[in-house]
Image (cartoon, rainbow, N blue to C red; front, side):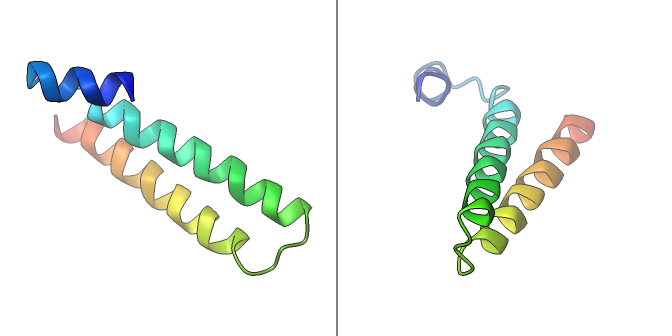
Length: 64
């Protein structure tokens, strides 16, 4: 929230890459916890979202 607020106030969006990467880490942790708890509905969706977030953050590091 702090990094997003900083980006909106100052209009410097260099931190978006790091926010997307941290979102990927967070979603990966959620997916692994759901897998450990044997909740079969949402663990795969969380892991797919985390992989997509990692892909976007790595791609944006090379573009910018």
